[in-house]
Length: 109
Image: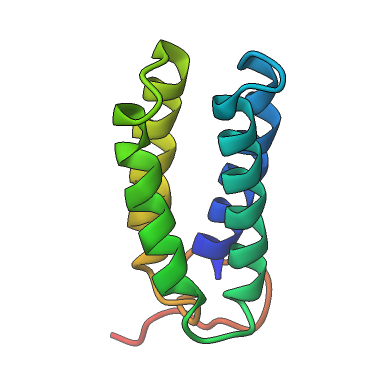
């Protein structure tokens, strides 16, 4: 579950950081739309199966989108956010290892 929260924050951050791109440009709309879709899918991934697969695909696309939009800030944001979205999309939604809420009990030795 914590992985979905992290990808939610990454999606919102990507959408907010789109304002550093030239307004109305293709890169602006790309970062805004991809960020909002990542945020939506991370929330949907908490309740629906299969949303992680789409998050994985979006993480890969974001990582390689610097080749399509060769603007320096977008390349760095795409590399970092794409890598993090990809890695966190591989974590199961039922994993509560670092989740601070709820009734998780410590591991038995």
